[in-house]
Length: 287
Image (cartoon, rainbow, N blue to C red; front, side, top):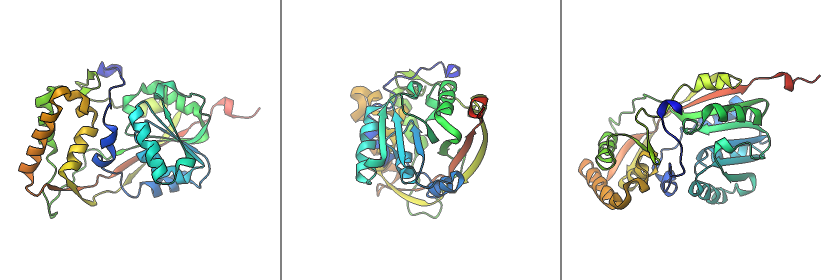
């Protein structure tokens, strides 16, 4: 993260967990089948989901592994994941650990697959990549999952107006300033890229890229969109302090001005999947 002059702190997603599932759009529906085929998942092996949030990705894959471990530094996210695991009948096959990725391996053992669902950029990536590589069994995979970038998702022909994301972000700037907030710090140049070089340097080969198609029509309510805003690091509830109520009132007013019915149309983004394989080292070869 040196390129951003930013350091992680424990307020990054403080207060966002209750809004996450409602606010965030799901991954494209073919993601699970894509990973099951690419990785030959058969109900055995172990999965570690690093930066698991409320378990969105981990719980969608848990039935394909003997055990799934979710790791996240936010206690609210871990509590949501534990609750949802019970709700979907996966509590006996999942374990949730409140810890930073930088604190791994934490005695968690070895895994066949490690996933990062739009979380890797928040970490000390060189350190975490090297550590996770050592936690994977020979032939194991590191999987980076994210929404497809720069994808046009017009709502032409759908029954409601589009979510006014640009106007919402401008309203956030009016309350929090022109520089993107991130915990107690700021990200003047956004989150870093360059994951390919980092993972190659850590001893991974690849990647194999899959684009799981989205485009499915969704209907969103004002409350859904407000939940989206409060699920984001740059507009986490705590950042507004005593002005939070005023922000929510202004946001609700903006949404009503955009759609008198309070309903919006949106298309699901496609999901990009990058599969990296753990390369072999001399220590993996029997003498």
